[in-house]
Length: 528
Image (tube, rainbow, N blue to C red; front, side, top):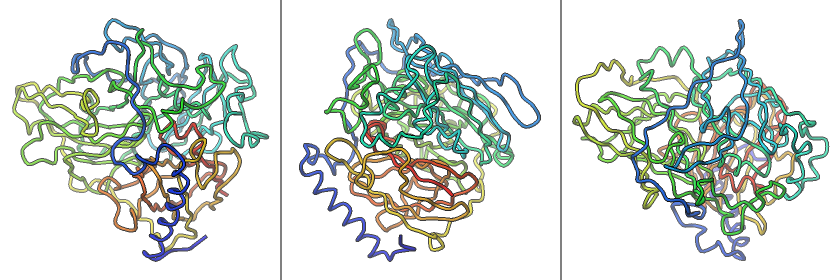
């Protein structure tokens, strides 16, 4: 391990690693699009008739009430079950859901107040729950073999895992012991932020999330509450996801094995599965009838593989319509105004939009400039006329963030994300549970260098990080604040600084392109 590198040394490591990637990829049919910008993956066309955009009203996921509370803790119960949803007009879609809806119900918690969630599995296959962005003890983090088994179904749940390389590492791992319930304890000793919970089962995260296993978990604190930000109905969580539909309205997905005995997708979709229907909170291309006032938009990319460049059309006079106030890990130090934002899978952007900058009656589209046809549209805001009361504003100062000093890091580690002959790898190896690529010590800061061959949104469990550099230069325009997922472009090297705190045990880093994740682009680390 290196304590640090000069700029020249840093770039040399990245170039050497990518030279190896190019040599490996040269024998595959993917080399021609290895370095192309835009989208990873392949579009899966729907066979169902699709509605015209902007016909459905924007749904807002319901907030789940605790079943009980005491002086320190709120207790929740969630049932994972199939549900018949009306997503496309005139058709019924069977989804795999939390509590019967997609997205699942939103949980709202206060920082420092413990949240305990008991999940029961009434689905036909095992599941795992991960609180994405949660600062969580290892036994509640959602390790991919910590299974919740289906009631009356598969009591082993490891059969499908044998299809991934190195599954001998399952020996001694927790596979759930046939339990159909699991209780997750979240201390939530972390800043106010937008988290989300989703399935994390090894080898089958992608189909499980595609079929509906995702929901919001919002954390609040006194610092955020003291700011005059939009509240109530003007504080909107927006889960953006792309899906494809079979002729009967069911979710279409190119799984190798729908019975979940063999993980992965058919060969053409190895780079990622792209849908042709854009859903926001589970509705296709919806409309919100909005006041001419400030709105807080908690935007989450809940897609398996699709990247977005989001913008408002038309832009307001003077531009800068999307005012970023927060990132994956909560508030920024100060707001940043963007004309557009790049959003990789699993990233969250906390935005404020001031619709009073538009004339009454304006129809403002949220568009995706990386898309074409239907995927270029996301949703629409129809601005109603008349005066409204709006006391919200965006302060010039939002929070204080202690910068991590990469020069004080006790170690620098390299993680190379690349394609192999049969799947996706980190440092040349397919995932094997219990094999640790790093053993950081609690209370120390390390620099982790992520090196890519392709588009890879890299997610780190346990602690948020700060982006130090991209290709040896400054961080990008969307890297501010605390992050838990960073978007790596093809042939890019990103350095992040992370301080490991509080909880000892096994955790993960992985690509959050869910097809890459299921095809073994994961690695374990252990805090000690």
